[in-house]
Image (tube, rainbow, N blue to C red; front, side):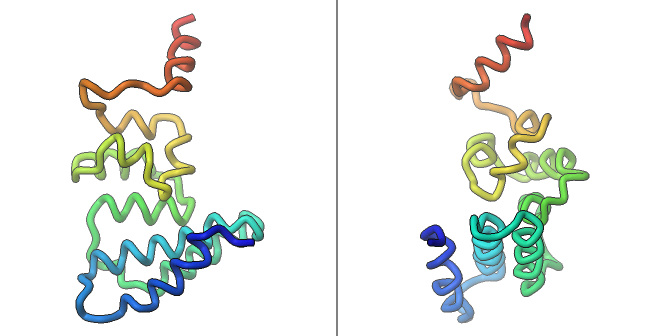
Length: 139
């Protein structure tokens, strides 16, 4: 059975074609629809990627900010310039917490150097896995 979001988002977003929604909101829903295809457990990895790219092609991406650029690269699994895109997205306002929790960054946040592009606030604590990794580096 497909995950909840895979079954409901495509149907729900079909209703979002009215003029009430601005272009940015449509692009966000386009990314969500592509994510439903990207993480479909019933498909092979290359099929997931191809279907997600096909979904993204349905939208006008000519005007977008660095955060959208990063999200599109993540969905397309185009990791070649991911750190540069992450730095630009951080300068545009994407926070450490958002990069750490948004599902669109699920795969890229595991890449070396990605999370370092997002400065932490003074009161943010490292999670247990990060603490263990820092302990290993110290040895």
